[in-house]
Length: 95
Ligand SMILES: [Zn+2]
Ligand SMILES: [Zn+2]
Image 1 (cartoon, rainbow, N blue to C red):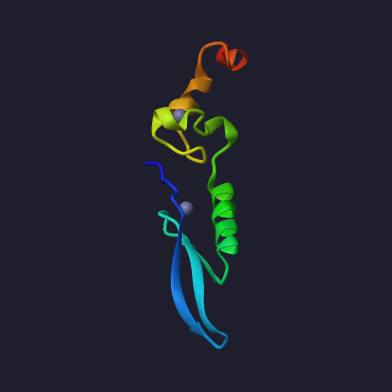
Image 2 (image 1 turned 90 degrees about the vertical axis):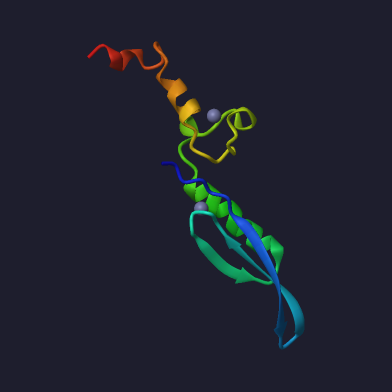
């Protein structure tokens, strides 16, 4: 089964010594949680970093996310299998 990563930025209000502030934290559908930040930009960069960390090799990513109902950082069995078309790895198929 393929784990889908759908990180979301959670936002909440917090009392600090400086007054009220917004806090942001990224949580992903895979269970990964990230540090709390006071700026959304830092949370967004956690999210981008996580997607880069978990993304499969370019050859296995989806090249047609709309059609395959995936996102561009997902492993896509349809697109990954397309690499095995006859002729693409012809040199290895002779053994
Ligand atoms: Zn994840
Ligand atoms: Zn695909």
